[in-house]
Length: 186
Image (cartoon, rainbow, N blue to C red; front, top):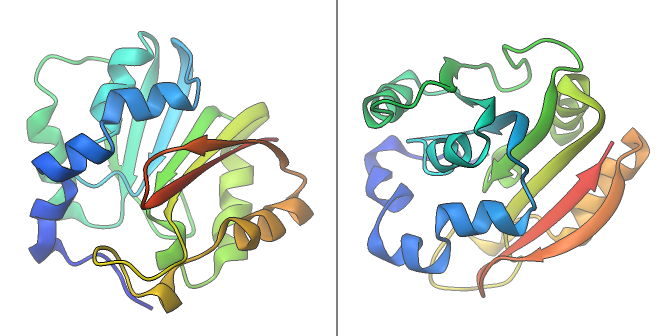
């Protein structure tokens, strides 16, 4: 199972990514409100975490990642934002309370998870009743950028994984020509 290589950190924030997936505009496509708590799983350098903290000005944002070095970079970028926190996480055990999160956000993470059902069960554990699960993933087709097609996960595969956990599919979110977005509610 392939994991993101921290040596390729420039891929997490560069002009091409900002053009194809501008973080604040992308979050707004998921209709993230201005209050509540958002958990950014696999937050990396805070590409979405920091803009989310600006959108959710009556709540807080938690960014979690399994790589401490990358969290250090994210923490350096925060500056004077007070409603944001970064935490080291395990892959299948998130450092947040049961039923405490209004929005779980994951971008390009699920294809890297070996035990997807265990991961999704943990997502369900932390989400409040009526909470939202927002997913961005690579389209499952050959293209120049991104992981090999055999490592990608299709929209249909994600839907079939979350349905037994009683997530309700709400909408497909248009991200760009390389990625898709899915929004579910618990």
